[in-house]
Amino acid sequence: MDGTVKVWRLDAMQARSLTQQHDGGIHAVAMTTTGKLVATAGQDHVIRLWDFSTAQVTRTLKAHHDTVSCLSMASATGRMVSGSHDGSLIVWDLTQSEPLQIYDGRGGQGAITISFDGKKAVSGSLDGDLILLDLEQGCLLRQWEAHRRNINFVAVTPDWHFIISGSSDGTLKVWNSDTFNCVLTLNAHHDGVTAGTLAEDGTILLSGGADGTVRIWSFPSGNLLRTVSLHTAKIRTLQIVRDQQFVVSGGYDRCLKVWSLSDGKPVATFVIDAAVMAAASDRTGKITVVGDALGCAHFLSLENLN
Image (tube, rainbow, N blue to C red; front, side, top):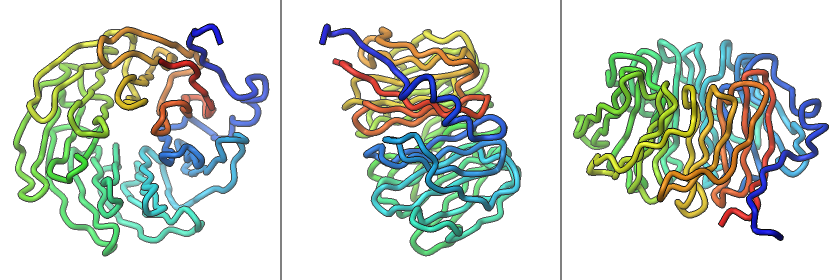
C-alpha cells in the first residue's frame, strides 16, 4: 500500500444497475453497527433491506403511504423504527416483514433515533414536535412542542440524560429526558439546522446547515469549537466514525466527504451524479452506504484511513 486514502464503489460499473432500486430519491439510510445489514427508504414509500457484501436487496418492507423520511436501527434488539411524511412511526423486527407497532402521528416525521439500549425511540416531526416511544411496552410516552419549524435531527446521549433536537428554525435544543424541560438552546445556523450527529461518547455534537457549513460543539457545555466549510450546499448527513477521528458528511453539492474531526481537514471525497440525501456508516468507519436523489444506493469502502 502507498499510504494514500482510497474511496471506491463496489463493482462500480454494476453499482448503478444493481442499486437503482428506488423509484424516487432515497431519503433515509440505516445500518447495523457491524455494517452487515443496510436499510434504505424514500419517496416510493418502500424500505429495502440489503446485504452489504453483495449489494443485493434481500427483503422489502411496505406499510407507509408517503415518503419514508427517517430510519434508525438498534443492533442490540434487532429492531428498526421508520418515520414517514404520512405521519406514522412504525416499529419493525428485522427478522419479519410485518410491522410490530404502528403509531399515527401528525405533520409527518423528519428525524428519528433509538436509544443506545434499544428501549426507547425519539422522533422529530415536520410540525416541530418531539415524540417519545417506549419500544419495550409498545406505547407512546410523550409528545411535546419543541421547535417553531420542522425538526431535521434528533439524538440521545448514551446515558439517556439528554435529548437533542435540531430544526429549520436554526436552533439546537437540549432537553432533560426526565423533566422534558429545555436546558440549553444554541443558535446554530441562521439558515436552519439540516443535519446533525452526536459522538458515541456524548462529548462532541455536530450540526450542519443549509449553507454547507458544519459546526462542531463541545457537549454538554455547548461551546463552539470549530466551523468547517467543505461543502457548497445544504448538508444532509453527518456521522462521526473511526473512534471519533473522522467525520463523514454529504449534501446537495453531490459530494460525500471524509475529514478529520480534530482539524477539519479533508482526507477523501466521493462525487456522485445527484444530491446526497442520506448516508450511514458502520462503527469502524470502513464502510458507508449513500442514498442519492435519483434513488441509487452507493456502497463504499474507505481504505488506509489513518
